Image (cartoon, rainbow, N blue to C red):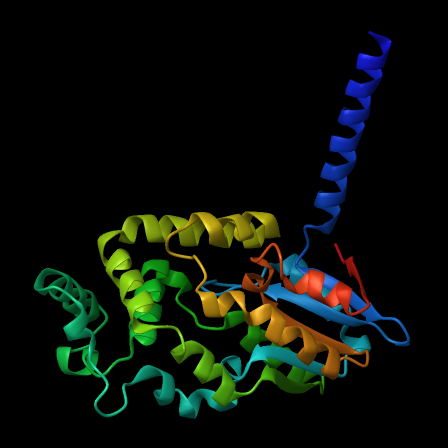
Length: 286
């Protein structure tokens, strides 16, 4: 009997310690440092479809500004200087099939109505890439939070104020290739689902925003696996492997990185595990 009680208490203590450890590491801001580096760098976990950045997170980052000389956003698509080239992602090239050919009459009518609500006419609709249509539907469902790259752009503005150089880990060409590399069929299935389930999409986006405000990273990662709307593509799941060596090459200390939480979605090859395998020590800043 005594052995059973001891065993139960041991399990209880283990569960408590695991819970305490998780709560301690459930943070959006991390200090990363590789053996041999004098200075630390910092990694911020971000996500799209948000209205604003949690003030507590912003305060912690601003408190580190004297330690930061370079800001790396994950993708050049988030960089304001790339806005003039956005048509490469937004509109089809010659002879590429329009969205009309992928949908039934009923689905197409529903999509055309959604676009009309956003003041987009049918001619323009049929020039749009599936990825752009998908993004517009998400932004419409997000309502007031239909800002793109709000976190990266906010950080860029602050970097300019404090004389911090702004760069990106993945250049424009590679960023576009990654976006357009996802098969049209996958995008179209998402578009169809968005059209038929806008209420659920709004609910999932609201859950994600609430999790981010609470710095509940596990909650967002769970949503990526549970939500039909937020589920990552195969290309998304490969991003962490691509980013890890780029972070290592750019990190000599004194760097702030913003990377999407989707890079933690893969249990086997998530970004944190890959960085630790390369000799990085990581600590949450709460």
